[in-house]
Length: 191
Image (cartoon, rainbow, N blue to C red):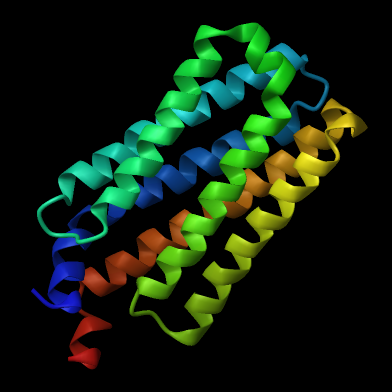
């Protein structure tokens, strides 16, 4: 099976990335719109985001395990997110104390994954640059959160919401790019 045939099989589930992107934007806007929320409320947002993101990523990986050679990376990322979410839900004190570290690590790993994924897609230069830019924004936001957690919850809320929105936009862009490929707009030109 060549790369293009593999993509045709994988992209049947392009809509999962739209759901994932919408969920991340929803959480990003929710976090941004409630900056005075208690720190405990912020941990609940992230606990839910980790769990839901993990479940969606695992679903995508398992649905594509027979057709995608890199499905294991999706599975590993989903398991990581799900385990982080479960860890945070099961230990609220740990979640409250270490939330900036969990969030920055999660954003960093997700952003690196996003950058790697965009190189694998047969998309045009403009789409590729947009996805690369959003991945780099996620990395920048993750470092800002990691190196400046003492600036307070408001800074964490603001930078985290920007990073979640950037990641959500990336996943929506990825979903639409996969949908476009599914319709044959790009793959027929490359064969």
